[in-house]
Image (cartoon, rainbow, N blue to C red; front, side):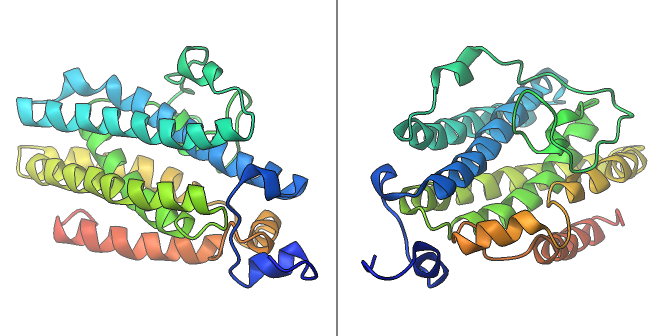
Length: 251
């Protein structure tokens, strides 16, 4: 970084930071918040899917569910290691938080964060059986792929590299979900159950993209931590989901 260029200008021009030693305080706070949201969402997501493994209708589906739980937990650990380099108390994440805690099914909190952790709002809702879990995995998996592609360009280089390694595995989780959903709609009453789950999860996943015209997005963009507005990412997700669901006659 130039000795004379302001750091926000440097980051806006695509500059990258590489060490906790050279990040300014406000950037550090926003970066830690971003990482905490990812870690908490992965741990909460893994905890939710862990409870559905025994609901799976066959060995192949159980293996797929277990793989998702394992890899989401691993992804959380990779980002948590970077948080630790900033002095975060990583030990508390292992056993001292109820990641499986959920709100009542009928609750609607929009995009609001809840006290206690930084998970995306969608991970506060409970899964309700195998079909529900598969639908949620497909919808949120598609959202995660879009959100992660955005995060592969964050200006803190070590984190961007981790997100690039994580993205293909998260995309594969969605592929596993689509395979499961195809089998569901081929079964008796499967389409009806899937459509009911889609009606429940689609607005809740959409809320995970945040508010349109977000002032916080502008702050993150100045630091090179975000590059695409919430509403543009949401539009990408809606198009991707429509394509997936149309292929299965679920729209």
